[in-house]
Amino acid sequence: MDRLDDMVLFIRVVEARSFTQAADRLSLSKSAVSRRVSDLENRLGARLLNRTTRSLSLTEVGRAFYDRCARIVADVEEAERSVADLHALPRGTLRINAPMSFGMMHIAPAIAEFLRRHPAVEIDMDLNDRYIDLIEEGYDVAVRIGRLRDSSLVARRLAPNRMVVVGSPAYFKSHGRPSHPDDLTGHNCLLYTNAPLADQWQFTVGGSTRSVKVTGSLRVNNGEVLREAAVAGLGIAVLPTFIIGEQIARGQLDVALLDFAAGDSAVHAVYPHGRHLSPKVRVFVDFLAGRFGPVPYWDASLHVLSGG
Image 1 (cartoon, rainbow, N blue to C red):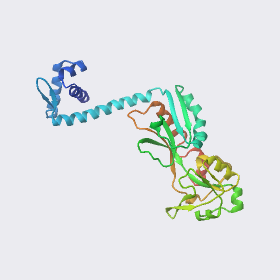
Image 2: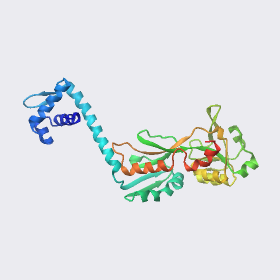
Image 3: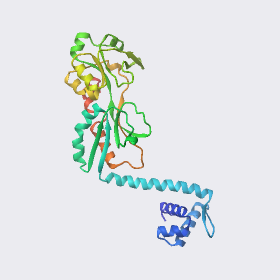
Image 4: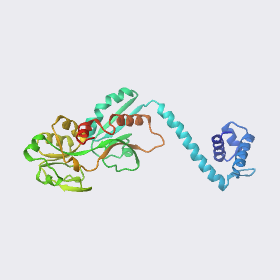
């Protein structure tokens, strides 16, 4: 007999604690079940069960073998279910959480296409910059940018998140373009207050990370407001390229200090651990990963500037 079948039979005997009950559950005769367990023991060269007229119990070797068999059979059953899930029709309500600016600019424009591809799915999307607990608040998936705090979640990288220093051509013409991070102390720097240290900008100088303290006339908790202020020539800002990629491509913003850029972070999709990844979550995460990728469309102009 197939070894996996023998493992399943042995598990059923242990769970039932009786050849008779196991035989009933397996639709086999008691003698057939007993014989197969004996054959298994002979093949392994070890007694797995202690038998009396009234009960069965595991030997020490039998307990170790049962534990391994249970894991193997569970893994096989999970693999079969996962294949079935790949072909299952995504359906039901998909609850999504995403940061406000990224959601408005890059997820919202893609929703119609996603729903056309998956008509049995409905989307309930919440856009805000609050750090939410997916499990506590009942979300299926969230898009997160930057450092991941919760290691209990599964994370899939969707795209790089590049932070760059920008100012308008007019601002740089009037005030000069900084050539070193230390030059920023003489500029009007526009501050994003949702950052942990809004007035401490990070750069890579001489192979190590350095903070430069900056000041300016505008402090705000929204990246799009900072972008518009920079485009208007108010000052210099540090912003993610997903917010300013279009303005860089149009020539409304110029990039400065690119050689001193701190290390990139990433855009991730995160979702709770589980033995099953829901088809609706799987297709949504695959959709976003395919839409963005290692060089997302918003980085096209910056990729040219950096020689990529």
